[in-house]
Length: 135
Image (cartoon, rainbow, N blue to C red):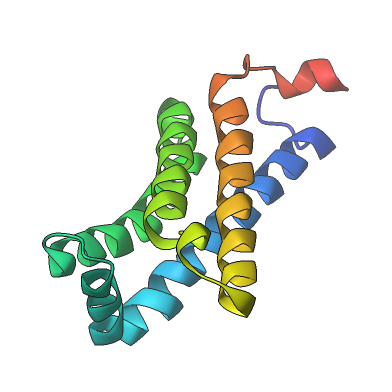
């Protein structure tokens, strides 16, 4: 039976849920609930159309992680999240422009985003394995 519960299937689901929750938390609690400040922050980075970019990022962080649970869109979601992490690292965690604690904080988030991007790229490009074969 194809839909049988397996530990591998449960682990995959939990992993997707944990990754998605990172973005959902950010999209809802960091962005949506702090909306005017988010748009101002994007504007302070010197990016064009800050309201559109910030709104797009908020929608992205809520919608794209949900695609991880749809088999047909899973690879697209992992790849989109990887590219998003690279973009946010380069646009919002420019540690080379700061000093002191601000530099430490920005460099941590820069390299964390790159590590997430690498992990997501690996997941996007991996060969799909049937959970039944892992038993």
